[in-house]
Length: 439
Image (tube, rainbow, N blue to C red; front, side, top):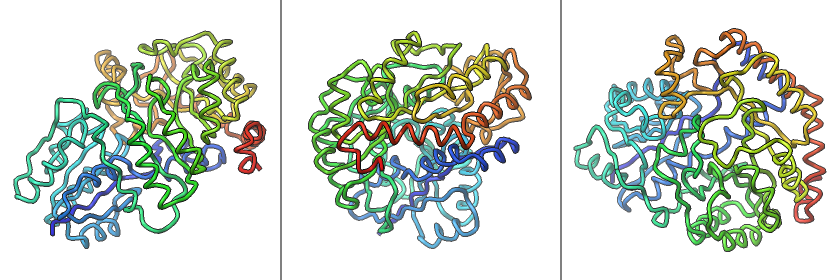
């Protein structure tokens, strides 16, 4: 029987040494990085759900390629090795592919980076899936079985999420998983210029509630009362009726986290519904106090209105992670200080701070490329969200690196982290369903 080995390159990465050392000392930053690193590779698990019955498979998460990982993959004796990697890990994926190909194995790469940089990726892999993987995956496997792999597979028509397979959560093994991932939509109706996920794989689409109920059923057979993270860009930005899915979440006792925007706080009925269904936390993109990115659309608003919405979300028993992006044009050391002061005094239950990162395929990357501001000495491995990859304006690279470290150090220091932990406990105590967990 033919065999495919699925290999996601997992884990957070930081290249700049001083930032990496700082991160190791900050408990709040470590906690969020650890949570992200625990997430299963939903894309590969979804493709596994499309395998023909006569194919077998294995799933091998690895933070990087090393001799042990390569040996484990080779021991599977696969007919195909399917790799997923983010931009920051894609150079490691290229080296892994070369090692595997030298051992006589065939490799295929997919994902956002492979979609944006398809020609580049074909130099390192036998095949590249550009765009959504579901509509082409059966063909990829058939071609691999016939020893007729093509260099590029691309489906031009958007994939209808009503046809989405149930991910193969069983491949995660019998050891307890701290959290599971579901995707309820693809893309986002907004078009923030720094966001690649909202456009690279096609337009905004929502998965029907019936599909989600089925996927949730598979998860709960493995982990009753699971902790879930939705792999969405903006879960509540659409118009669908999620009532059946929310009812299923409430019935199974799941706790869950997702991304949305502040406008959720102005919809009281929806807030009450998702809190009752076990939503414990949402990430809200606040981006910057001073600058606004192109394409944010109706997500832009004055700060009093935004803060009122955040208060409403947290009063419903849902903690808000405020997401900030440092380093966009116009950023100064004074504006970084203002951001630190705002966050330290804010009611936010948690915080995420990253550097502006011009991922390939985004409008931001194209603009900085045209302006000759991308740093030629900093390749894809620097696209970590914590490393400077472009010439800032008006700051120098060194000034932005130093200012960002000071911002992160202030916000994620021990006492501010403890303060946000106390805030989260108080917020979760507002919702009777979550009170036992808040303690």
